[in-house]
Image 1 (cartoon, rainbow, N blue to C red):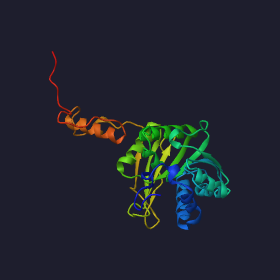
Image 2 (cartoon, helix red, strand yellow):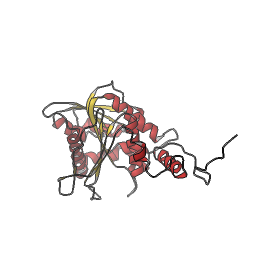
Image 3 (cartoon, helix red, strand yellow):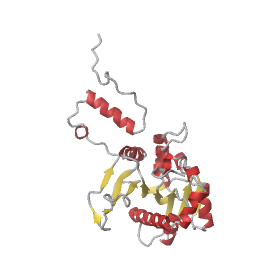
Length: 281
């Protein structure tokens, strides 16, 4: 179990953290059940599915099936995938209506292309940013996950992933790999001024970019300017690099720092970084 104040993903791999004792909390802890159900409802709302039409949905990190129960109550069919056997055992004991699959999302999603009409995920994606063994490379695992997710979604479908990023660099790493896999979309933040209620939702589109719903504030009303968007389109060079001379030391340092945030190996900075070399004859 994680120490107080410690992030769960720092305590070890998820299949060990979510043991039988942790899994029982998702059945007995009323507050945890309420929070999980509300986040599932918000994620489903952000999917913007056709009203009155049952859809076939994927639940990444389905755990004990709480979010899946909400999908069933709303008339949808779903498949859940989770890496923790203990959590899936709880889901089976609760007689959830969806199909359950034991698997590691960082190794892909084993379904045919175009299988699902949408995808939700509650508090799972940030686990891919932690390396629990030498072979775990967060950037590669994230790209594998997003590439597989892009494939199994119907073209034009959405995926809404609720997550708890540790910092802005981790959030950039996640969105960068999603963009590489072909997604467009953005990050929506509900209750941005609340320490406890603040929630991040990564809204991904597997087709042309569409609108992102408004975020919620403390008064449970919608507000603007609380989301950031990203696309696969290239930003014009002059806009992205305004004021920075190409090949200058500042340009090189900025490029190296950006590659570090993307999880790539970069040589350390020295006094010679970005130094102009004399021409050869």
